[in-house]
Image (cartoon, rainbow, N blue to C red; front, side, top):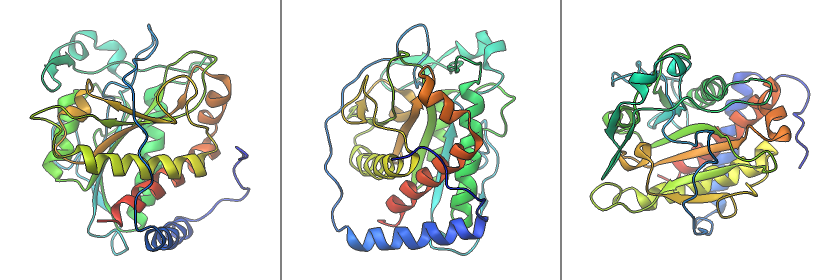
Length: 294
C-alpha cells in the first residue's frame, strides 16, 4: 500500500460522511469480529522509554483533563470516547514529579515518562498531541463526545492512574492511548497493545478491549500505510499486564503504537502533516467500527 496521501484537502464534513458511510457498511457486512492473535509481553529497547502511560488532553472534569466536546448529531452521538495522547511536553523538566510512584494495578510504576523522538528531534509527545487532536476532530464530526486526557502539550503528566481515571469517570465507551515506539532503528511498523487478564483489575475489560484492538488494528493497517511491527508483538497485536494505563482502566482501552520513531521510514511519515491526517482518518475509522458494534 502506498504511503503517500491522496492530493487535495478534504473538508471536515466530507470526512464525517465518509467515516459514517464506510462504518455502516462494514458493521452490516461483519457479523463476527476478526481472529485474535495471541500477544507477547516485550518491553521497549532501553534507554528509550516504551509505551507506558503517556499523557492525555481535555478530560471531562477528571484530574489532569478538560471538558470534552461533542460534534452534535451524528451516527456516534451517544458515544463517549477518551483519547490519551502519550506523555507531555513538560515531563522532561519535571523529573521528580513524573518519577513519583503511583498505582498501576497490583504494583506501582512511575507517574509518567518522557517519551522518545525521531533522529531529527521530533518529539513523541508532540506527535501524540497533534494526532490526538486530529482524531478528536473526526469523531466529533460524527457526533461523538470526545475527551482528551490533557489540555495541551505544555504541561506535566497526568500520571498513568489519572489517565485511566479520566476514562473511568467519563464512563467511556472506548479509550485509546496514542503513542509512537522507540524501538531498534532496523525495526519498522505499528502494534496495538491490549490488556491481559489481571485479577481484580482487568477481568471485565479484557474481551471488549480485544475487540477494540482488532478494529483499530484492521483500520490502521488498511488506512495508514504503516506495516505491522516486525520487531515485536504478534502480527501487530500485543497483550500486556504491566501497563498502568490499562490495568487501572474500567472501560475498554488499548494503546496504539503508531510506528517506530527510531526507524527512518516510520519517522518520515510521522513528521509529515499530510500523513498525520491520513493516520487520524484510519484511527477514527477503527474506533467508529467498534463503537457502532455497541
